[in-house]
Image (cartoon, rainbow, N blue to C red):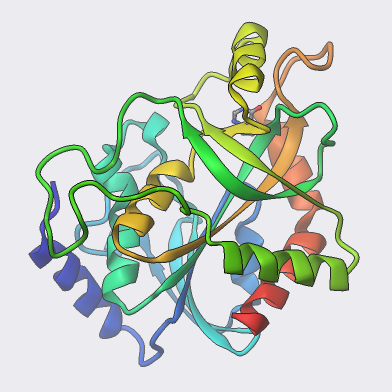
Length: 272
Ligand code: HPA
């Protein structure tokens, strides 16, 4: 379990790499990492070099923290994230959010690729997350609470900040980007859901299902940060169409929405 000393050491390491002081955090989901390529004068720090970040061969090469200017705002973007299904602890998955807070970041935009549970949605749609359902049966705040980081029993009545959601909705309509709004259910993975599980998830009130975002959003809320959650619906969830799911399709669809996605995030950055 990380402590405050670890967070501060990591913050200092990052602050020594750049004079930029990020004000907005970005966590970029599968196939959406190209947004980081738009950052001007980027300072790129591979996760493997960052003290106290989880270490893994599995997480690959493209995983780096990119700090620089995007549409007039200094951002710290995570190109690639740590997933619970990879075997990381939730403390490891959410440590970067603690570091963002220590860097002075108050707004974090969390993105993901996910499956559409709501049958009126289509692959390639973007969805503003209005709320979530935690189906994983654990919580990143489990364990002793550090009151300096946040309260023991945080309120989750507005994890996905209304003001930020309104900004995103305005930007989307200005740019003629069709936008869905809905509830995201967190599934541990790495196996996709079964058709019966998808029927259950729909009955429970979710519009989309994916394997990330919720732990980071809970920790950001614990740290009193504002969260904007944006999902890219890459496929209809299991059993809706008579076809199997595969990861290549997820990545392909996420990359196809690149222009819409980049436009939306850049527009939001301008107005935050
Ligand atoms: N289910 C869970 N996670 C996902 C999916 C899905 O259908 N698509 C992309 N990530």
